[in-house]
Length: 507
Image 1 (cartoon, rainbow, N blue to C red):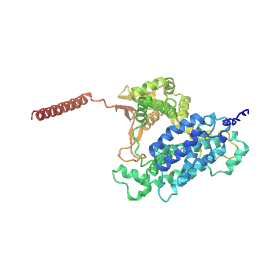
Image 2 (tube, rainbow, N blue to C red; image 1 turned 120 degrees about the horizontal axis):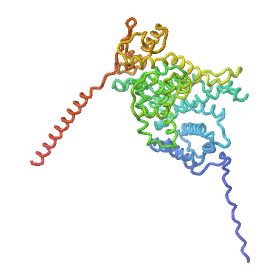
Image 3 (cartoon, rainbow, N blue to C red; image 1 turned 60 degrees about the horizontal axis):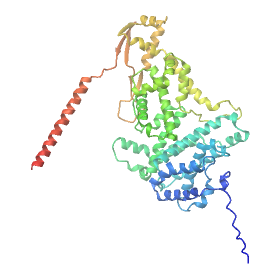
Image 4 (cartoon, one colour; image 1 turned 180 degrees about the vertical axis):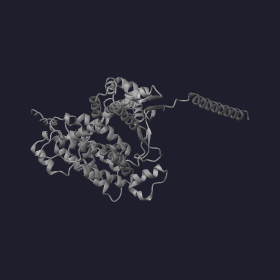
């Protein structure tokens, strides 16, 4: 009897990679419940590894052209317990962040207005769980993730404001949706969330106590002692500083971080120290990481600002900084020194924050380039402040060669016919070279004394200018004497230890 061939089962269908909503890779199916378990067990070290490494690896492998599965698609893989809700919200935070970062590479999915709305509502839900809790939320998240939550929240707000301002590119349906959802990504809602996190965490009271070396007051309660709230509160202070700067209110920006211990050095020394540090540490950054790109851009922006500051207020800077300025901004610094306002404007626009408007546009009139108006306004204010100062470096260059000089002689050098106009320029020079310097050890960034930041000072007596060089020469003799004394002390201590060791060995 012939043996009938056994019918082989049909091969399994190939996964429909063109429609990822219908297919979730097996490694991702395993990853989701594992991720939830680590959140549930508060395994901080493993959560950090997942956040910084594993999620990005899976994104690069499976989701370069499509977004991650929506939260409804992963629910079957989740364990239903008290952490399910917070995990779903955290997953959606990563889901939307991935879309914001990679949507330009996606085949079909674009960053839509609905994505922006849904991401905002998800952030509101996350912060509501944190702020409205009667007791601290029983989860542990890495500090890096907490910082990125605040950072991404503000970035998406900025992105939405710029999106909303480009009305000529919006469809009628999008304009209607923007008009009907005026409360979404509203500046008052964003500020309210940040201030609520600050208040809930009692971070200002904690910082005040830390500054005075005291124990945290009892008023901070359980929330102030919980790391999640403490770090979110601190990062919210930095977020308020950033947001108020973008809104153009620099006074309130500094007032927001009144309890934060910030550097009180001037711009030149602060930026110089940061640039030198970046040069020493840049080898530790991964070349293709977003941190590397961000650090490189920030380094260029600081050099851009330094080139303008040093043009108006020349000072000695570290050789590392000086070589970078010559290499990357040498030609532009030459134009700055000639008073080229266009170069000042270009460097300002490159290095300034992304200024935004706190109010929505008039959807009926559809203004052109509404999203650029805040930056244009700030740039105009900057140029109006800079233009009268362009002559100051020239005045300084002449004054440095004299101890006394008649105003008429300086006017002849500068080919200025009106001596009284030159007197006004001299007073402007003296005024602009004075800056507010903090003289206390407190955290008040808005107080201090006016001190000269120039390396020369002068006063006018009648028609005569009296000039004094305020730069104090270093006393190298004292430095070497101190080092010699330290060496003698070390030598004496070494001899005493050696003598004691010898005596112990003999006994």
